[in-house]
Image 1 (cartoon, rainbow, N blue to C red):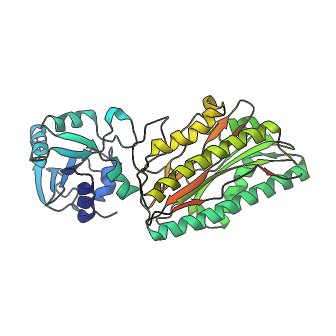
Image 2: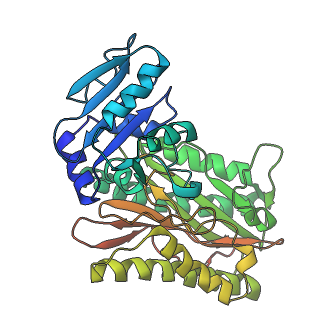
Image 3: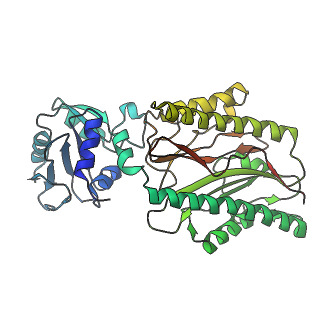
Length: 391
Protein backbone atom coordinates (compact mmCIF):
# COMPACT_ATOMS: atom_id res chain seq x y z
CA UNK A 1 0.00 0.00 0.00
CA UNK A 2 1.42 3.39 -0.98
CA UNK A 3 1.55 6.17 1.61
CA UNK A 4 -1.46 8.48 1.20
CA UNK A 5 -0.79 11.74 3.06
CA UNK A 6 -4.24 13.22 2.48
CA UNK A 7 -6.00 10.09 3.78
CA UNK A 8 -3.71 9.79 6.81
CA UNK A 9 -4.22 13.44 7.76
CA UNK A 10 -7.99 13.19 7.33
CA UNK A 11 -7.97 10.21 9.69
CA UNK A 12 -5.83 12.07 12.26
CA UNK A 13 -8.21 15.04 12.14
CA UNK A 14 -11.22 12.76 12.64
CA UNK A 15 -9.63 11.51 15.88
CA UNK A 16 -8.99 15.06 17.14
CA UNK A 17 -5.24 14.50 17.49
CA UNK A 18 -2.23 16.68 16.70
CA UNK A 19 -0.53 13.96 14.69
CA UNK A 20 0.61 10.36 14.32
CA UNK A 21 4.13 9.27 15.24
CA UNK A 22 5.06 6.25 13.13
CA UNK A 23 8.11 4.38 14.41
CA UNK A 24 9.83 1.09 13.61
CA UNK A 25 12.95 -0.89 14.41
CA UNK A 26 13.73 -3.95 12.27
CA UNK A 27 10.11 -4.74 11.49
CA UNK A 28 8.80 -4.80 15.05
CA UNK A 29 6.01 -2.40 14.03
CA UNK A 30 4.57 -4.02 10.93
CA UNK A 31 1.51 -1.79 11.19
CA UNK A 32 3.57 1.40 10.72
CA UNK A 33 5.44 -0.22 7.83
CA UNK A 34 2.19 -0.95 6.05
CA UNK A 35 1.00 2.63 6.46
CA UNK A 36 4.19 4.08 4.97
CA UNK A 37 4.49 1.28 2.39
CA UNK A 38 8.06 0.17 3.11
CA UNK A 39 10.04 -2.89 4.18
CA UNK A 40 11.93 -2.93 7.50
CA UNK A 41 15.22 -1.04 7.86
CA UNK A 42 18.23 -2.14 9.91
CA UNK A 43 18.16 1.03 12.05
CA UNK A 44 15.47 2.97 13.89
CA UNK A 45 13.29 5.19 11.71
CA UNK A 46 10.39 7.48 12.56
CA UNK A 47 8.04 9.91 10.87
CA UNK A 48 5.64 12.42 12.37
CA UNK A 49 2.53 13.15 10.33
CA UNK A 50 0.75 16.25 11.67
CA UNK A 51 -2.98 16.77 11.35
CA UNK A 52 -2.12 19.60 8.95
CA UNK A 53 1.05 20.57 7.16
CA UNK A 54 4.07 18.60 6.01
CA UNK A 55 5.41 15.50 7.78
CA UNK A 56 8.93 15.17 9.16
CA UNK A 57 11.11 12.05 8.88
CA UNK A 58 14.02 10.89 11.07
CA UNK A 59 16.43 8.38 9.50
CA UNK A 60 19.84 6.88 10.28
CA UNK A 61 22.88 8.26 8.46
CA UNK A 62 23.56 4.96 6.70
CA UNK A 63 19.95 4.63 5.51
CA UNK A 64 19.11 8.16 4.32
CA UNK A 65 16.53 6.88 1.81
CA UNK A 66 14.41 5.11 4.41
CA UNK A 67 10.64 5.73 4.20
CA UNK A 68 11.09 7.75 1.02
CA UNK A 69 7.33 7.62 0.38
CA UNK A 70 6.74 10.09 3.23
CA UNK A 71 7.16 13.69 2.02
CA UNK A 72 8.49 16.61 4.04
CA UNK A 73 11.67 17.62 5.85
CA UNK A 74 14.17 14.87 6.67
CA UNK A 75 16.83 14.74 9.37
CA UNK A 76 19.66 12.21 9.78
CA UNK A 77 20.98 10.94 13.09
CA UNK A 78 24.14 8.96 13.88
CA UNK A 79 24.78 9.09 17.62
CA UNK A 80 22.13 7.83 20.03
CA UNK A 81 21.82 11.30 21.49
CA UNK A 82 21.00 12.60 18.02
CA UNK A 83 18.20 10.08 17.79
CA UNK A 84 16.69 11.39 21.02
CA UNK A 85 17.05 14.93 19.80
CA UNK A 86 15.49 13.91 16.51
CA UNK A 87 12.38 12.53 18.23
CA UNK A 88 12.04 15.85 20.09
CA UNK A 89 12.37 17.65 16.74
CA UNK A 90 9.67 15.47 15.20
CA UNK A 91 7.27 16.22 18.05
CA UNK A 92 7.90 19.95 18.33
CA UNK A 93 4.59 21.64 19.18
CA UNK A 94 2.57 18.41 19.35
CA UNK A 95 0.71 17.46 22.54
CA UNK A 96 -1.76 14.70 21.56
CA UNK A 97 -0.17 12.02 19.40
CA UNK A 98 -1.21 8.58 18.14
CA UNK A 99 1.17 5.62 18.29
CA UNK A 100 0.90 1.83 18.00
CA UNK A 101 0.27 1.54 21.71
CA UNK A 102 -2.51 0.15 23.92
CA UNK A 103 -3.05 1.36 27.50
CA UNK A 104 -2.11 -1.43 29.94
CA UNK A 105 -1.53 -3.58 26.83
CA UNK A 106 -5.27 -4.31 26.72
CA UNK A 107 -4.94 -4.92 22.98
CA UNK A 108 -1.60 -6.57 22.09
CA UNK A 109 -2.55 -6.59 18.40
CA UNK A 110 -2.00 -2.81 18.41
CA UNK A 111 0.91 -2.61 20.89
CA UNK A 112 3.89 -2.64 18.51
CA UNK A 113 6.09 0.12 20.00
CA UNK A 114 8.45 -0.84 22.84
CA UNK A 115 8.04 0.65 26.31
CA UNK A 116 11.32 2.56 26.18
CA UNK A 117 10.29 4.47 23.08
CA UNK A 118 6.95 5.28 24.71
CA UNK A 119 8.87 6.64 27.73
CA UNK A 120 11.07 8.74 25.44
CA UNK A 121 8.10 10.31 23.69
CA UNK A 122 6.36 11.05 26.99
CA UNK A 123 9.53 12.71 28.32
CA UNK A 124 8.83 15.55 25.88
CA UNK A 125 5.44 16.28 27.47
CA UNK A 126 3.44 14.43 24.82
CA UNK A 127 0.24 12.52 25.60
CA UNK A 128 0.05 9.25 23.66
CA UNK A 129 -3.19 7.79 22.32
CA UNK A 130 -3.74 4.39 20.74
CA UNK A 131 -3.72 4.37 16.94
CA UNK A 132 -6.01 1.31 16.92
CA UNK A 133 -8.84 2.94 14.97
CA UNK A 134 -6.42 4.79 12.69
CA UNK A 135 -4.75 1.50 11.79
CA UNK A 136 -8.10 -0.02 10.90
CA UNK A 137 -8.67 2.65 8.26
CA UNK A 138 -5.55 1.56 6.40
CA UNK A 139 -5.29 -2.11 7.36
CA UNK A 140 -8.78 -3.52 7.61
CA UNK A 141 -11.11 -1.76 5.17
CA UNK A 142 -12.04 -3.54 1.96
CA UNK A 143 -12.82 -2.03 -1.40
CA UNK A 144 -15.62 -3.12 -3.73
CA UNK A 145 -13.37 -5.58 -5.55
CA UNK A 146 -12.43 -7.32 -2.31
CA UNK A 147 -16.07 -7.50 -1.25
CA UNK A 148 -16.87 -9.22 -4.54
CA UNK A 149 -13.97 -11.66 -4.07
CA UNK A 150 -15.16 -12.44 -0.56
CA UNK A 151 -18.63 -13.32 -1.82
CA UNK A 152 -17.17 -15.70 -4.40
CA UNK A 153 -14.89 -17.27 -1.78
CA UNK A 154 -17.89 -17.66 0.52
CA UNK A 155 -19.88 -19.40 -2.22
CA UNK A 156 -17.04 -21.85 -2.87
CA UNK A 157 -16.42 -22.32 0.83
CA UNK A 158 -20.02 -23.38 1.38
CA UNK A 159 -19.64 -25.77 -1.55
CA UNK A 160 -16.56 -27.22 0.21
CA UNK A 161 -18.78 -28.19 3.15
CA UNK A 162 -21.15 -30.07 0.84
CA UNK A 163 -18.20 -31.85 -0.77
CA UNK A 164 -16.84 -32.79 2.68
CA UNK A 165 -20.17 -34.08 3.99
CA UNK A 166 -20.62 -36.20 0.85
CA UNK A 167 -17.07 -37.57 1.16
CA UNK A 168 -17.63 -38.53 4.80
CA UNK A 169 -20.91 -40.29 3.99
CA UNK A 170 -19.49 -42.16 0.99
CA UNK A 171 -16.45 -43.40 2.89
CA UNK A 172 -18.50 -44.57 5.88
CA UNK A 173 -20.85 -46.44 3.56
CA UNK A 174 -17.89 -48.04 1.81
CA UNK A 175 -15.43 -48.64 4.65
CA UNK A 176 -17.42 -48.11 7.84
CA UNK A 177 -15.31 -45.08 8.77
CA UNK A 178 -13.08 -42.28 7.47
CA UNK A 179 -10.09 -40.59 9.10
CA UNK A 180 -10.24 -36.90 10.00
CA UNK A 181 -7.03 -36.22 8.08
CA UNK A 182 -8.44 -37.81 4.93
CA UNK A 183 -11.40 -35.43 5.09
CA UNK A 184 -9.05 -32.48 5.57
CA UNK A 185 -6.99 -33.47 2.54
CA UNK A 186 -10.12 -33.94 0.43
CA UNK A 187 -11.09 -30.33 1.22
CA UNK A 188 -7.59 -29.18 0.25
CA UNK A 189 -7.97 -31.00 -3.09
CA UNK A 190 -11.24 -29.11 -3.62
CA UNK A 191 -9.40 -25.84 -2.97
CA UNK A 192 -6.72 -26.68 -5.51
CA UNK A 193 -9.30 -27.60 -8.15
CA UNK A 194 -11.32 -24.40 -7.63
CA UNK A 195 -8.72 -21.65 -7.48
CA UNK A 196 -8.69 -21.30 -3.69
CA UNK A 197 -5.80 -20.98 -1.27
CA UNK A 198 -5.33 -20.89 2.50
CA UNK A 199 -2.57 -20.32 5.02
CA UNK A 200 -3.39 -23.56 6.89
CA UNK A 201 -5.55 -26.65 6.26
CA UNK A 202 -9.06 -26.72 7.79
CA UNK A 203 -10.09 -28.19 11.13
CA UNK A 204 -11.90 -31.54 11.06
CA UNK A 205 -12.81 -32.77 14.53
CA UNK A 206 -15.05 -35.63 15.64
CA UNK A 207 -16.75 -35.90 19.04
CA UNK A 208 -14.18 -35.08 21.77
CA UNK A 209 -11.77 -33.63 19.22
CA UNK A 210 -14.43 -31.05 18.35
CA UNK A 211 -14.10 -29.92 21.97
CA UNK A 212 -10.60 -28.60 21.23
CA UNK A 213 -11.08 -25.20 19.52
CA UNK A 214 -7.72 -25.40 17.68
CA UNK A 215 -7.60 -29.13 17.11
CA UNK A 216 -5.41 -30.23 14.20
CA UNK A 217 -5.82 -33.69 12.62
CA UNK A 218 -2.37 -35.03 11.81
CA UNK A 219 -1.54 -38.30 10.02
CA UNK A 220 -1.29 -41.04 12.62
CA UNK A 221 -2.69 -38.74 15.32
CA UNK A 222 -6.21 -38.26 13.99
CA UNK A 223 -9.44 -40.09 14.81
CA UNK A 224 -11.87 -42.15 12.79
CA UNK A 225 -15.33 -40.80 11.96
CA UNK A 226 -17.96 -43.50 11.99
CA UNK A 227 -21.72 -43.79 12.28
CA UNK A 228 -23.63 -41.56 14.71
CA UNK A 229 -20.72 -39.22 15.30
CA UNK A 230 -20.72 -35.42 15.72
CA UNK A 231 -18.32 -33.65 13.35
CA UNK A 232 -17.04 -30.06 13.39
CA UNK A 233 -15.68 -28.53 10.18
CA UNK A 234 -13.93 -25.15 10.30
CA UNK A 235 -12.95 -24.11 6.77
CA UNK A 236 -11.22 -20.87 5.75
CA UNK A 237 -10.07 -19.94 2.26
CA UNK A 238 -9.69 -17.10 -0.23
CA UNK A 239 -9.42 -16.84 -3.98
CA UNK A 240 -5.86 -17.39 -5.19
CA UNK A 241 -5.67 -13.85 -6.54
CA UNK A 242 -3.87 -10.65 -5.52
CA UNK A 243 -5.58 -8.75 -2.65
CA UNK A 244 -8.20 -11.47 -2.18
CA UNK A 245 -9.82 -11.71 1.27
CA UNK A 246 -10.92 -14.72 3.27
CA UNK A 247 -14.14 -16.56 3.96
CA UNK A 248 -14.05 -18.35 7.34
CA UNK A 249 -16.94 -20.63 8.33
CA UNK A 250 -17.67 -23.38 10.85
CA UNK A 251 -20.54 -25.85 10.61
CA UNK A 252 -21.62 -28.96 12.47
CA UNK A 253 -22.64 -32.33 11.07
CA UNK A 254 -23.94 -35.65 12.42
CA UNK A 255 -23.35 -38.96 10.68
CA UNK A 256 -26.77 -40.36 11.39
CA UNK A 257 -30.45 -39.61 11.22
CA UNK A 258 -30.71 -37.46 14.36
CA UNK A 259 -28.24 -35.98 16.87
CA UNK A 260 -28.70 -36.62 20.56
CA UNK A 261 -30.83 -34.30 22.65
CA UNK A 262 -27.64 -32.96 24.26
CA UNK A 263 -26.11 -32.20 20.84
CA UNK A 264 -29.22 -30.29 19.83
CA UNK A 265 -29.45 -28.40 23.11
CA UNK A 266 -25.85 -27.18 22.93
CA UNK A 267 -26.12 -26.31 19.24
CA UNK A 268 -29.28 -24.31 19.93
CA UNK A 269 -27.50 -22.23 22.58
CA UNK A 270 -24.52 -21.58 20.29
CA UNK A 271 -26.75 -20.57 17.39
CA UNK A 272 -28.75 -18.21 19.61
CA UNK A 273 -25.51 -16.62 20.86
CA UNK A 274 -24.28 -16.17 17.29
CA UNK A 275 -27.55 -14.51 16.30
CA UNK A 276 -27.41 -12.17 19.30
CA UNK A 277 -24.02 -10.89 18.14
CA UNK A 278 -25.25 -10.40 14.60
CA UNK A 279 -28.36 -8.58 15.83
CA UNK A 280 -26.34 -6.14 17.91
CA UNK A 281 -24.19 -5.16 14.91
CA UNK A 282 -27.22 -4.83 12.63
CA UNK A 283 -29.07 -2.66 15.15
CA UNK A 284 -26.07 -0.40 15.75
CA UNK A 285 -25.46 0.25 12.06
CA UNK A 286 -29.18 0.77 11.38
CA UNK A 287 -29.27 3.37 14.18
CA UNK A 288 -26.04 5.02 13.05
CA UNK A 289 -24.32 4.52 16.39
CA UNK A 290 -20.83 3.28 17.14
CA UNK A 291 -20.35 -0.31 18.23
CA UNK A 292 -17.11 -1.70 19.57
CA UNK A 293 -15.65 -5.18 19.52
CA UNK A 294 -16.02 -5.82 23.24
CA UNK A 295 -19.75 -5.00 23.14
CA UNK A 296 -20.49 -7.69 20.56
CA UNK A 297 -18.47 -10.24 22.52
CA UNK A 298 -20.47 -9.42 25.65
CA UNK A 299 -23.83 -9.74 23.89
CA UNK A 300 -22.88 -13.08 22.37
CA UNK A 301 -21.25 -14.51 25.46
CA UNK A 302 -24.15 -13.56 27.73
CA UNK A 303 -26.45 -15.98 25.92
CA UNK A 304 -24.07 -18.84 26.66
CA UNK A 305 -23.55 -17.72 30.26
CA UNK A 306 -27.30 -17.51 30.85
CA UNK A 307 -27.70 -21.05 29.54
CA UNK A 308 -25.17 -22.29 32.10
CA UNK A 309 -22.32 -23.00 29.69
CA UNK A 310 -20.18 -19.92 30.35
CA UNK A 311 -17.10 -21.84 31.58
CA UNK A 312 -17.09 -23.85 28.34
CA UNK A 313 -16.83 -20.84 25.99
CA UNK A 314 -13.06 -20.42 26.17
CA UNK A 315 -12.15 -18.01 23.36
CA UNK A 316 -13.16 -14.62 22.02
CA UNK A 317 -16.33 -14.41 19.95
CA UNK A 318 -14.65 -13.45 16.68
CA UNK A 319 -11.84 -11.76 14.81
CA UNK A 320 -11.30 -9.19 12.12
CA UNK A 321 -10.72 -10.68 8.68
CA UNK A 322 -9.14 -9.55 5.43
CA UNK A 323 -6.21 -10.69 3.32
CA UNK A 324 -5.15 -12.49 6.50
CA UNK A 325 -7.63 -14.73 8.28
CA UNK A 326 -6.95 -12.93 11.55
CA UNK A 327 -6.62 -9.33 10.43
CA UNK A 328 -5.55 -6.16 12.21
CA UNK A 329 -8.97 -4.54 12.60
CA UNK A 330 -11.32 -4.73 15.56
CA UNK A 331 -11.77 -8.20 17.03
CA UNK A 332 -14.97 -9.33 18.74
CA UNK A 333 -13.32 -9.70 22.10
CA UNK A 334 -13.83 -8.85 25.75
CA UNK A 335 -12.22 -12.04 27.04
CA UNK A 336 -8.67 -12.46 25.79
CA UNK A 337 -8.36 -8.70 25.32
CA UNK A 338 -10.74 -5.76 25.75
CA UNK A 339 -11.04 -4.56 22.18
CA UNK A 340 -12.30 -0.98 22.35
CA UNK A 341 -11.91 -0.38 18.61
CA UNK A 342 -14.98 0.52 16.57
CA UNK A 343 -16.45 -1.79 13.95
CA UNK A 344 -15.93 0.34 10.87
CA UNK A 345 -17.73 0.50 7.53
CA UNK A 346 -15.86 -1.50 4.92
CA UNK A 347 -14.55 -4.09 7.40
CA UNK A 348 -15.41 -7.72 8.09
CA UNK A 349 -15.43 -9.81 11.25
CA UNK A 350 -16.37 -13.32 12.23
CA UNK A 351 -18.97 -14.27 14.84
CA UNK A 352 -18.07 -17.75 16.10
CA UNK A 353 -19.24 -18.70 19.59
CA UNK A 354 -18.56 -22.21 20.81
CA UNK A 355 -19.24 -24.57 23.71
CA UNK A 356 -16.49 -27.13 24.36
CA UNK A 357 -17.41 -30.04 26.58
CA UNK A 358 -15.18 -33.03 27.37
CA UNK A 359 -17.26 -35.37 25.20
CA UNK A 360 -17.89 -33.02 22.25
CA UNK A 361 -17.73 -29.41 21.11
CA UNK A 362 -20.01 -27.18 19.04
CA UNK A 363 -19.10 -24.00 17.18
CA UNK A 364 -21.05 -21.96 14.62
CA UNK A 365 -19.19 -19.37 12.57
CA UNK A 366 -20.30 -16.83 9.99
CA UNK A 367 -18.75 -13.69 8.51
CA UNK A 368 -20.22 -10.19 8.91
CA UNK A 369 -19.32 -7.46 6.40
CA UNK A 370 -20.31 -3.87 7.17
CA UNK A 371 -20.61 -1.95 3.92
CA UNK A 372 -20.03 1.74 3.17
CA UNK A 373 -23.76 2.66 3.25
CA UNK A 374 -24.48 1.16 6.68
CA UNK A 375 -25.61 -2.25 5.45
CA UNK A 376 -24.66 -5.37 7.41
CA UNK A 377 -24.19 -8.54 5.37
CA UNK A 378 -23.98 -12.03 6.87
CA UNK A 379 -22.12 -14.40 4.54
CA UNK A 380 -21.70 -18.13 4.81
CA UNK A 381 -25.24 -18.99 5.82
CA UNK A 382 -26.44 -19.18 9.44
CA UNK A 383 -26.75 -22.87 10.20
CA UNK A 384 -30.06 -23.35 12.01
CA UNK A 385 -29.67 -27.06 12.80
CA UNK A 386 -26.95 -29.69 12.74
CA UNK A 387 -26.49 -31.16 9.27
CA UNK A 388 -27.64 -34.77 9.46
CA UNK A 389 -27.41 -37.52 6.89
CA UNK A 390 -28.33 -41.17 6.94
CA UNK A 391 -25.37 -43.42 6.23
